[in-house]
Length: 129
Image (tube, rainbow, N blue to C red; front, side, top):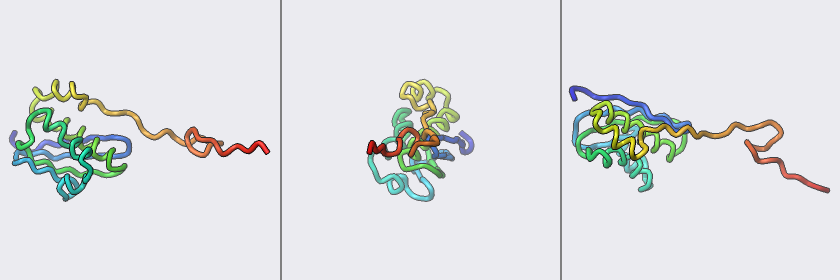
């Protein structure tokens, strides 16, 4: 790998851009360490999952900029972006990542609000009398 690889991951309203280069395993999210940016262990595991799957935890320095959505959507967007970047680095990683379901974009998003309703499906309170 001669220079950095870029990739984009999306989930709900979150968009993550990943810049991956050879290094020692530092992961930076919005200029903070990923363990500071995602304090919940589950979200940290989501970010690490593609690297653990391909056994490259210490092979790359990763810089991420992520915007929009909430913490869980952002973590899953980062997970997808890292997976895509790893596939650009080495195409042999793809089957292992695909088997874990890391190469599939989750299409679920918030349903739009309908007129005559309080939310997408929630009705206003009904009073018989």
